[in-house]
Length: 280
Image 1 (cartoon, helix red, strand yellow):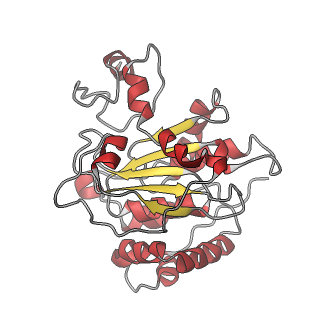
Image 2 (cartoon, rainbow, N blue to C red; image 1 turned 30 degrees about the horizontal axis):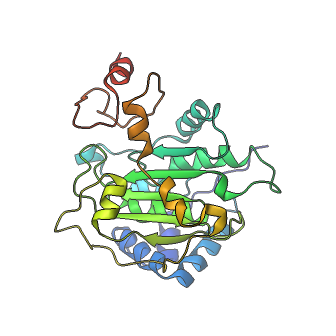
Image 3 (tube, rainbow, N blue to C red; image 1 turned 90 degrees about the vertical axis):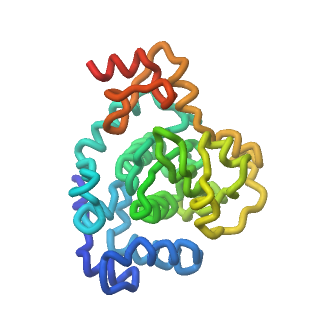
């Protein structure tokens, strides 16, 4: 029997975030995320209110009703049924150690479905968060704190980059969400990558004078634990999908609107043959 999905009312989320109007939610959530004690207190409250059901995006209705820019940017949420279908399409050949990449990730609804599909292939006794790495990119200032919340509360290992996924320019920040103790019953920590040339090269992005340094550091960064490959773990957090697809003979990908239909070599994320095949 499928457990009923709970969606809190707008007023309930606003009360949890300590705000009186929904437009304040992104800034309020940023402030909470930067304070580990407050962040994990919010995590515990949210888990209890949702009866510890973490297989869907709790913000689906709240963010769509209050923060999606439908008029100007035609933003809308991927329905849960479609998110599940997309996850099933890419899950067949996945194996331990694989990396999942999603551009235009929004608040993380599709990633959550993929994470759920990955973890239920194991028992609670042999599943480890370090088995899978998730890479997400998103441009929206409004969506980013909700995305980081969704990844960290589920104890995932993930990289998150705020950037235009096509041009790779004007990057605003990059984070590592890390389950330090490799325990699926614990929350992840959140680390902000430094605004330097090494990080920009790492993620194939460009900082701008305006955006570089816009975010303050989150949790302190120390040595990465051995179960994540030590400091070599960072080598896995790359824009590998772009490199793979450009040289592929065969690929299957879920693409943001316009990528396949407005292909340009400067984008580099999709090989021309695959772009034409998807467009057809």
